[in-house]
Amino acid sequence: MKNIVVFASGSGSNFQSIINAVSNGKLTANIVGLITNNKSAFALERAQKHGIPTFIISPDQFNSESEYSKTVLSKLEEWNADLLILAGYLKKIPVEIIQSFDNRILNIHPSLLPKYGGKGFYGSKVHEAVIRNKDSQSGCTVHVVTAEYDEGPVIGQSTVQVTDSDTATSLAEKVLEREHILLPETIQKYLTTLKNY
Ligand code: GAR
Image 1 (cartoon, rainbow, N blue to C red):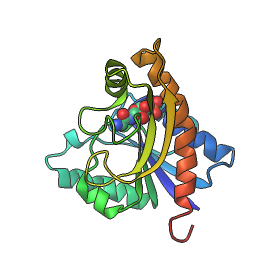
Image 2 (image 1 turned 30 degrees about the vertical axis):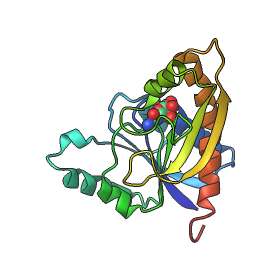
Image 3 (image 1 turned 90 degrees about the vertical axis):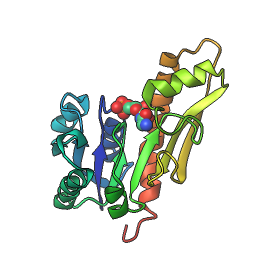
Image 4 (image 1 turned 180 degrees about the vertical axis):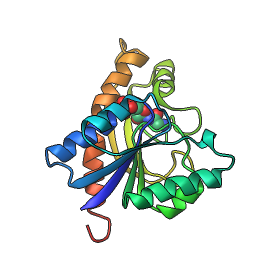
């Protein structure tokens, strides 16, 4: 079975959906660690509750990106990580880490990429833009992480309808509900494409 490490910066409800999918057998993988840049992230409590090791580390603690990358990579090696999942992780992943985990980092994004991707589009910012532009549809996307922010190959997408009465908050809730289904399902499918599954 493959070893998954989850990166999360906040509530970690997507992290929880991965924990749940492993517990109920829909996702056949081991969650070997949680990495967060935020010592107050609720994701940490979720990890502790399930006995998942945690590592709090932020690029801001380091003088150079390379030092930061090396520290993260040594933790990933210690945990024997096969696949990294960015589940509401709001820091940029350095190219050195992306190269070491080539095609083995997935990210969930709360829009139908390529719409509303890239710098400045995260969390509520995405939903506010969708409402402002009066789009009739939105959704979420899982993609492989490459050096181009939010631009790697799309491997899963789920669409929701936006109604006239939707606000950024109600849309965020609808999309998040879909994320919790899409993310574990897409990870499971992706794992079967990795060698020696
Ligand atoms: C999710 O909606 C996720 O798609 C988004 O942050 C939220 C985290 O929620 N990620 C991004 O915007 C990344 N660009 P969670 O902490 O409850 O999983």
